[in-house]
Amino acid sequence: MDTHHLETARTGRFHTLGDTARAREVWFLLHGYGQTAADFLAGCVELASPQRLLVAPEALSRFYLRAGRGQVGASWMTREDRQHEIADTLGWLDRVATELDDPARPRMHAVVGFSQGAAAACRWAALGHTRIDRLVLWGGGVPPDLDLGHAQGRLRAMRVHLVRGHADEAWDEQHLLDDCRRLAEHGIAHDSHPFDGGHEVQGLVLRHLADA
Image (cartoon, rainbow, N blue to C red; front, side, top):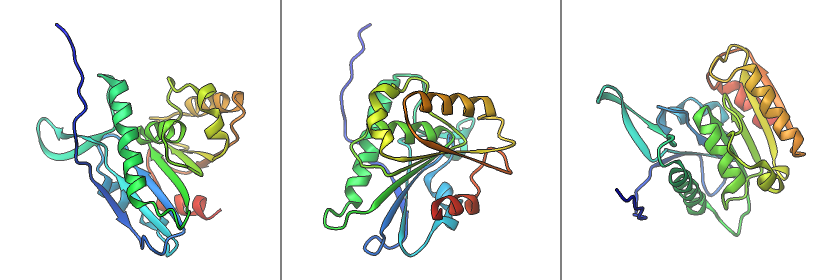
């Protein structure tokens, strides 16, 4: 059996909240596994302000959450054909950013990735073509296969934040410590932000981090 790959056009979906013309900051919000962009954006509304445009792109792979029926969620990638899925994700996120970009009005770009979305956010910040000023990894960390030696130049230019709930069992304290160690070994400055909670985004905690 021979395996072949072809690029094909695909229509993606993203949601926004805020005044595109007025915003001085653009915050890209990358949902977790099995979530939708709309639901994730709804959980981050505390971040909204007159100077911020919130942008929630949806992962390109959707699926039924319960045995082929009912509620639908999305996934950024799986282990199957992962390099092409990663490339498609980077291209999609860059396309969304370009669609909203205004070269005459440079704006601060931040990306928040939750859970599986944290890996997508980290890869985009490190390997994409969009300038990212702040990277927030929430309930998920640096992908183990990401070459930080190759990406350190871009990541050193960003404010990097790692956010974990004390009761988060999906991304435990040891994973956080390991990610902090990897970043430090490559000279990538970062801040760690614990909060009282589990594997979840708390809008008020996000707002406090953004305003700091």
